[in-house]
Length: 284
Image 1 (cartoon, rainbow, N blue to C red):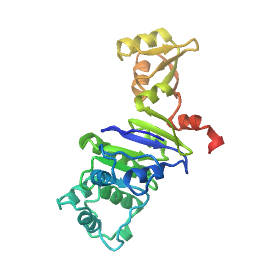
Image 2: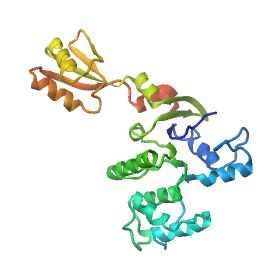
Image 3: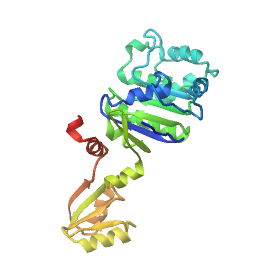
Image 4: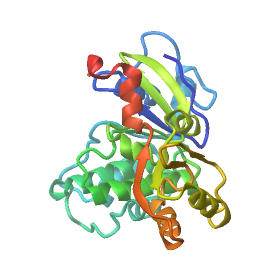
């Protein structure tokens, strides 16, 4: 396989169990050595150059090892010294960012799964790396924890310009943050596609069934400033613009006397696209 990761990307790595995602992430981060080919990071390909480049990289692969009898701050202090990070204040700043600033002296052994995942992320981002590598970072988290984790990742990318390479089985979550996708099957990169290109391929739209097509079309154009829609002979209008805010579309139509009998999302989800790409049950 061969792939490239551009600065500022959130690259979502997708593949079934055993496809090679974790192995690939380990090779990029230096935890495994490729049998052939090469890894290039920040323009470096030599062993010494990669070691220097990896000082700009943070990673959270599988379960990070922490001392069970130490607090979050004490664990990070150990790794700060080990990694040669000069600024001590980075520990509290990092704990604040991941939501562990109030963990106090509570020992790691008594942490919940969510707290452990947060500390793993804190370990990865301590020192403000340019590249962040995350392997299944939201495994075991409850819905609230997943949402908070997603917000942290987006904030790092948006405010710190951190480039992120992340794998996840929870494709619905990945679809909310990734700007580029790499689909892996049996150790091969089957496809690499941007989020915009994937959206066009999946054609995610709202299908709105109404009693008055012409009136609905006029409302879309004049009140909602929406001219990119498709009208079909079965009384449905297909609209892409309001995929994330269907209630706005529904309210505008109903308030203006158009009866809406159906409002559904159409097209492929990221999960469906992946299943179709790798052959569905044949490769499950």
